[in-house]
Amino acid sequence: MVNFDLYEKYDLNSVKTLEILIKSDSDYLIYIKKKQYKLFVINKEREIEKVFSMAVGNKKQFLTKTHSGDKGTPEGLYYVIEILSKDAEKETESFRKLKRMNYVYFTATNGYHLWGHPDKDAGKGVYGPRFFRLDYPNKEDNKNYAALKRKGLIPKNKEGKYVDQGTGIGIHGTNDPVSIGHRISSGCIRMLNEDVELLDKYIKIGTPVYIEK
Image 1 (tube, rainbow, N blue to C red):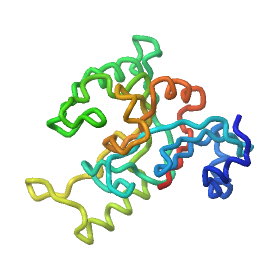
Image 2: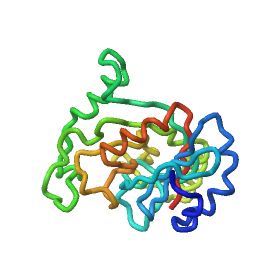
Image 3: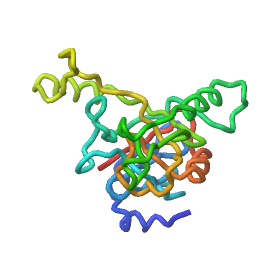
């Protein structure tokens, strides 16, 4: 376990004010600092149990997600609403759904490439052995999206309609380990496969995930 004094080292002072999260039904809070490329597991005693490196969305200045296709990682309080695992029973949707997701082949021509190789396809297996889906967009995201749309700051598609907010944001593994520590994902939080498997022991449906710039 990491000593609480390391909060200062990692600039996590704001976590001390997040008592509502620590008092949730979950035993742990997942706390993400985008600019540090770090994911922290914090227990109810406000101690750092684990620190993992991760990658975030490929958007300039670590801006938050506002709409589909912007490749931003959202910011704020979210909750885990679905757990997909390669180690689940093979007849379960948890196993089958992740298998289908990892079977999809992602191409560089569509913007999905390996880190440092814009001409090389991301290929299959991009989600790794776990996918923890978050409840993005939530009520706060809906409110922000509506405000941006009123200001004309949400782009429109070829049909002249505003693009939606997007969905499918989660914490997952990767088939591109050298990408960890960079802005490369389409908005998700990406971890090493061995790390996302370790994270599994701290995650359940309803686990709070707080994301900060």
